[in-house]
Length: 175
Image (cartoon, rainbow, N blue to C red; front, side, top):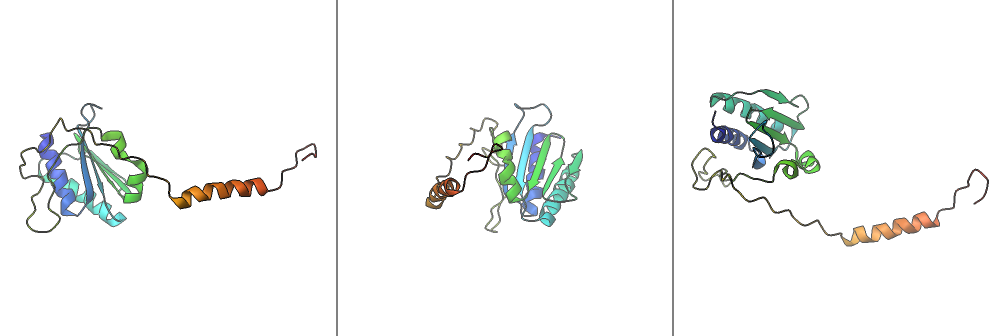
């Protein structure tokens, strides 16, 4: 199956079940095992399972094969292996913690997503002039978050508390 047709089927399936923050990355330059990594978020165990099921059904319907599905029993992180594309469906807390975009995301694929306003948005399967630009520029990393005033004041207070605590006795009995 053509990789573009496969990724369109996957993205359409994710959009049908209201996946959040869908990202597609070209990984052909990083590994020979697969050409795309698709990362999406689901808000609950039930939704991540439904998203994975939707991906399986749409890919099979489009003529693709599903190699394996992992994590559906728990539903916090479900991985669907579609051969040339790997789909990671995570809950937001896990997605933030594991940050898969940092591992696979140096070459994002631009793809047109459905309009979230509900007024006849196009699916990813509809053509777009600059869709799936293989030479897309890497995503710019956001600068690290600045420390808040509460964070700055908490550290010195912890130091004072540690300094004010009594010294431990050593095995020789000296302080």
